[in-house]
Image 1 (tube, rainbow, N blue to C red):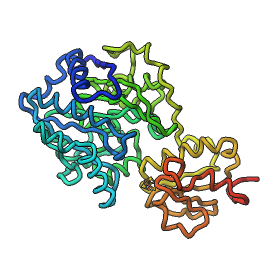
Image 2 (cartoon, helix red, strand yellow; image 1 turned 180 degrees about the vertical axis):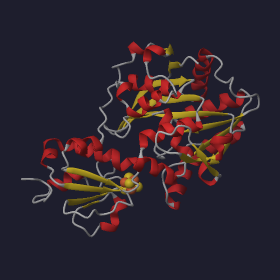
Image 3 (cartoon, helix red, strand yellow; image 1 turned 135 degrees about the vertical axis):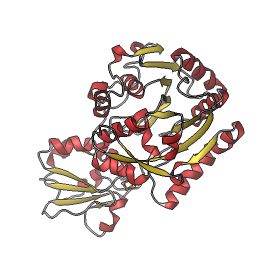
Image 4 (cartoon, helix red, strand yellow; image 1 turned 120 degrees about the vertical axis):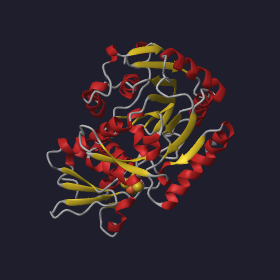
Length: 395
Ligand code: SF4
């Protein structure tokens, strides 16, 4: 099937009815988008509300308008998401924000759509065909049993993966242990294995406001990107964000796995012209902490023990902001995540983030969830290293 991507302009501040029409027009442009779902079929709308933060989650107005369109087309609509928070209190706080503060539950009740907690529903283990890494994955029954899946992502530039778009958004159909397993074992291959197994039918990317995690800010882009193929949607978004999809590893793995094309010339782009958008928005360049570790010739080592991406993303920002001091880092091992274990060697150890607080009595503990400038009042690698006499700087 020809990959088609509709890029449509919207007012970032638009309300539901002003978003409804442009999405419906885009669906019309793409043609036959709903054909794969039988009349009265069930659709899982999977919005990205992973962080319970306005800046990084999808705009509720887009979720509401999209759900209304699906309901108006005669589908049974189920809206489900699950965040990475493992603690009961973290999850309850997330649920209050997403279900109540954003108005999700009230609105969906009013239009006859059903909001579900993917976490509390059943999950089953499914074999992955021709796996890149995971031979089997435990996935929510909701994602496995519906007739059609719509991945509603937010346009985000992140350090780990470079972009977080429609393919990565699907991680919400897995329980937190599996999300963490992806992050620790093989994230890029895992995203592809998951998308092969669940196969979202429609990608919608909310760029009313996009989030630049490196700069730490959201800014009004005023676009919605809708496609019949997630690889094509993510590739077009990456171009709009000033990145080359050919340099984004998970996109290239997805293309090789024949999930779709990342070649912009092979994608039919409708609506706004891509050449008018590329370069218009000034996104930062992603900074992957593992790239720095790799280039350090062994001076920097990162030991992951099931961290979430927030710590890894912030670690990338921290390495970048160290600038010339980064080259002075010698023989350090940074432990990140709740299960990070102290290695049996004599390197300088840094315990990064509240999840390593069991080592808080050690000298090199940096607090914060995550540390760095995202959360005011937390520690940062830079501040830590700036302390006089730090043994981690090779003076
Ligand atoms: S300390 Fe880091 S790894 Fe732990 S929950 Fe916070 S951001 Fe995630």
